[in-house]
Length: 211
Picture 1: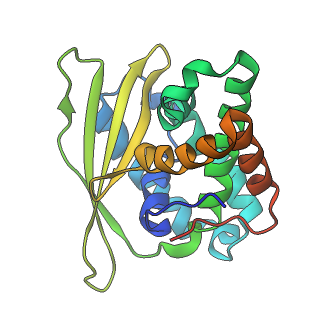
Picture 2: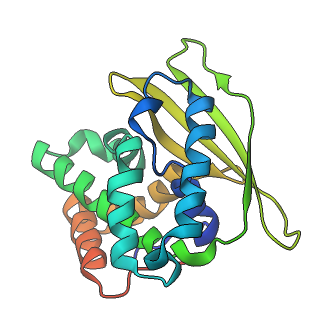
């Protein structure tokens, strides 16, 4: 079964912090966009009663509406699949994107309710050489004095604004983590084998992120 070695709580929080971007965030720099959205994301955790009670259907809806649009899922999927992406047909590529999207939403929705009482520090952006790529670093501070969690967003400027194409939690890349897992499935059954495994997991009744 496909699994993710990143801790589910940390990995989810990396996705969560791009929730709830409002329309007026268009045109902001990447660090300003992160800073603006953090407060809105945390507000959802504090005020949405369905989220607080662990309603995974509601959480998945929120993720689809507020988080997924701010991620470059095509690029993320291509990077996660790696070199075999070149051999995939157009239909297979679209199916991979769809299944990867569902996997992210279902897996992290199941872990959503871990967060209460956290605070987030957004650090200055580090721009790439061509100004179209950037990394925004954040530090998540847990209640009770737990060890802070570093979450870095690798971002690309597109026609639709800045999009996240990788999230690194404590230095561990979400995309590379999935690439390692996907490679095992591709080695066993090719692209079709990976698609079958993803589809079976996404149809499962209890989505979760393996620790």
